[in-house]
Length: 194
Image (cartoon, rainbow, N blue to C red; front, side, top):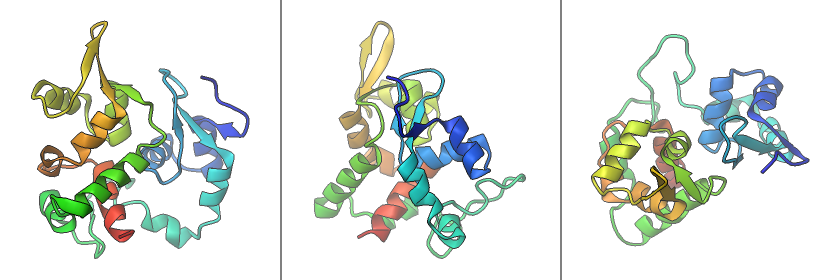
């Protein structure tokens, strides 16, 4: 599927925003700017111009709040993830933020589904890893341990989007100690919107 009229690519986006390509990709993967994922090796992101315009209308203060402290510094720093900007253990963060059962868990699952709206309905391991910010090895490991459902077609694992949602809203994902930025932000944004 080609990039359509009214859409731009990642390359055009990072030049338009005057940010690095890595930062622009992170913004798309974490839902800062919505995008449509394409099933190609290059030019995978298609971004609607009106979504970019909506992002640019935000104040610089609002934009800074959406990106974790230290995420794009030259020297790596310990990232602050809580609302108070204090470093915290992501296992404690999840346990303190989301009840592992009941209505809140159902609402979180629905929120994860919303955040994955622009992802393909069926994802390969590299695509799933790219979307949720984990390594391909980690995704494969959870498939092999039967934590994440997948089917093997022509020698490649394929993950249906609902299976990825079930995994991210399940006990195994809550127990991941070093959660990806995408996963942490999903949890924090969910709680902020409750």
